Length: 465
Image (cartoon, rainbow, N blue to C red; front, side, top):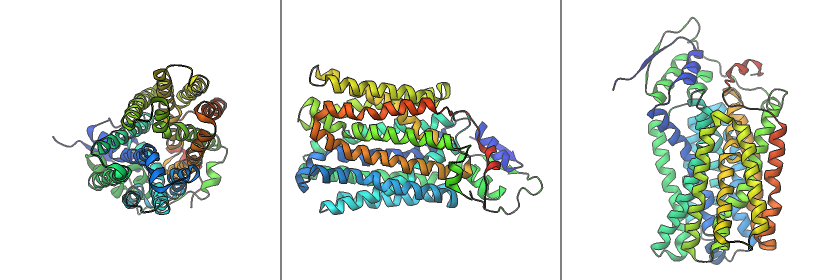
């Protein structure tokens, strides 16, 4: 099949092509490769949630030390996101995506072989740093290769990938459990993360080129057109207007933090950060510990609780898909409000009725919690960040939001086992329902909707060096 051909005269033509190009199999392949990071993020974060009993038994862990180990990845991701976002704007998206995956492979292998809890803790920190570095760059890259109409939808596919990974983690644990791995079960499961990361790294090296819009801002017209050809598998004929192919002077935002909180960007930054942080609190407190909740609801049988975990998380896949498909029609903000409301309702119902009604009904409420989360704030928190800034600021903006949001992840991951151990499931749900309620209030008050907007013209309003 012959490649399509286009003619580029100016760098603006590159933006116009990206915004107007049709979705193709090539675009779909790039999305899968880039969003593979989200698969790894979800897999590596949740895989230990299926083995907390083994970790506690093997290393004689207290609830507090278990919380430290479970919180290590979000803590490492906090720093990785800040660094990854900054250097992605400076050095390019592809380099950061490659470095982070190599670090993740090393961290996964080290964690799987950890002889003592302190070593496991250190390698989980490295894994978190790698994921944190990769995630905001992945969202940025997806936004920059998608056409204007599909940006919001494509970025939001990350929730679908997330829950596919969560279900996969439960199935893999079930597979290794059926092989009779015994006390080594969690090690085999964690080690599989390195296998997945290696596959994604190879695919990126073969198929992924630099972001075309980043190249347009940071390279000559000829160099940017080569990246356009590689990413979209097209032929680009260059007929530059006068001065367009001159050596490009690299420019960066002069005061990134001041810019993110100036009059234009302050509401966007606050909204994206609030949603991303609050959704992290509610998910990492409840969703991450669904294996533990499933054991509480369904009993102590390992296979039964893992089966329940997989089935409940399928609701997250459908929620993520629903959120992605409805984003172009309803917008990110409206879906977030609906999702937070649904999540708060389910947490209040579970808190009031667990132990007083049928087991399957409580499990259904947890599934609806995941549907509301993944179709609303879980999906939109990351999307709003990646869609709210022009290319020159996008890496730093998504990096800042991702970094701050990890405080929410850390808080939820750390406090759930402590509150749960002290007060039980009912009171834990009632206490943590405050997160989605605050989310409804914040999202209602700040009226910013990024879906469907082309923000590249805002480059002229940003002070650069």
